[in-house]
Amino acid sequence: MSDFLSLGISKNVSDLLKVNGIVSPTPIQERAIPEVMAGQDVIAQAQTGTGKTFTFVLPILEKIDPNLEHVQALIVTPTRELALQITHEIENFLEHIEDIRVLAVYGGQDVEKQLKKLKKNVQIVVGTPGRLLDHIRRETVQLSKVSFLVLDEADQMLHIGFLREVEEIINETPATRQTMLFSATISDEIRKLARSHMKNPKNIQVEKTQTPAMTVNQVAIHSTDRGKQALLMQLIETHRPFLALIFCRTKRRVSNLFEALRANGFQCDELHGDLSQAKRERVMERFRKAEMQLLIATDVAARGLDVEGVTHVYNYDIPQDTESYIHRIGRTGRAGSIGLAITLYAEKDYQALESIERDLNITIKKQDSEGGSAKEPQQTDSRQNRQRKPSENRNGRQDRRGRLGENRRANQGSREKTNENRRPRQDRAGRPEETRGQRQDRVGRPGESRGQRQDRAGRPDETRGQRQDRVGRPEETRGQRQDRAGRPGESRGQRQDRAERPGETRGQRQDRVGRSEETRGQWQDRAGRPGETRGQRQDRAERPGEASRAKLGRPGKMVENRGSFASKERPQRPDGNRSDQSKKPTEGHNPRQVRTGRSSDEWSSSTSSRSNGNSGPKRGSFGAGKSKKRR
Image (cartoon, rainbow, N blue to C red; front, side, top):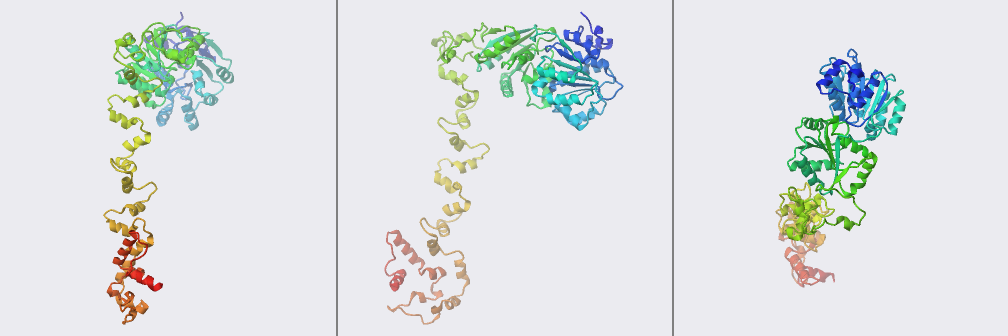
């Protein structure tokens, strides 16, 4: 087998590789490095974990001129993590090579810091397409003198949708550059990109068929969606991995699994696109230092991550395609080490698993959750798919796998071997097609009392509105809820008297129930009695401003203004009595009596008679006299 010296790598760099335990080149390095050293454009296809990074890093370090202060090499990667990883590999060499600087530019990092470092004459730039375009538009990075352009994980960049950005970046570089394209798979889009921007590239393919590394043992374990979580915990307890990657399909499933594992005492962390860049860097640093054993991630971490010591990969959710499967399990078994890749699948995932086997032309060993050989699912009706295991009692069994730490086979016994009926099992493990949240709403969360659960999720047969009337809406204070739904023991009318009816203004409520510190009589004089018109109320209780005018006027003047009443000799009625209308103001008149012709006692007598069913005033009253005179 050849060494790096025979490939054209200098003795200084070869010695640095030996210090790091790298003695012999991998097949992709052995075939591609001589072509790159000769200045040839290269399209290299090889599976992950075969050493593609050193294939372009070593020739670039050999050809960089430290005396030139412009950017000489540009390496474009699809993810921040891969950009940081490549930068870290280059920095390890630069500790022993002077006057060469490297900078990683990517989103989520302070732009000002990157600008300061770019002013220090950086020769190698490693970055993601988005942030590179940002610097190009700012004119803070000049690519017009670039000698080497590397597109790493090109298939992933195009899969994410960076084709337009990549072409914009390529157009900023000179046509005299040397272009290297590295990818695990070569698609039609990549071939089209190569034809447009590369000069007679040399195609190098280590393996004709893309397959997982032979050093990775692959196992598929049958389970149910509900049983995956406990099964994964059992596998981790059994295998005790040094470092393990656990892949989920979505960010939500990553977060849910992370919370569950952490609650059960496992040293773990999560990695997905919603985390800030600083958080992602801290997580990866902890994982590389083995400060935690389990990293739960989405497929964003499956590409290009090279963490030494990963012994296990768990596919908590089956990959969506064969390519993702290859890159996931490629995180273990790297550089000749032995790794284990375990895929958890339910019956609905069986066709996807078969597709992976068919594309890779392999057979993955299948097991059930108890370690036995799994049988292929048959086309049966839904009732047969739900049927219990042999000798398993439906009403007395645990959920399909049993609880952590208990003998599962004992849980599959007959009714006499268990004291748990169907209801407690469903309360513990959930009903069919019931989510975790629905089960918690029905039976309560850990440590939650019955009252707390009912306040959070509602009582039986209680609607959402009824529960909000009882415990309040989100961000609603206790007083606001009582004004809206009533206090304990308070009727609807009492609540409306206290807190207003729907669409009712404050003034309308005060007219209806009275103001604060206002007596009932004062309120009725101001707003009227039940069934009383506005005119009747004003006849009884004075109009606005009427009383004040009575106080300000002089009796003599009022008499002069009353016309016939100004005579000192007051007219006599036929019966010999003085007319009531001839009374002076000093004899008891007030503006309301002048207007209505009744005293307060007469008004009360009249309203009393009306309330007793009599339609007219009593005989002998002042009102009756007027009525008789009109006739």
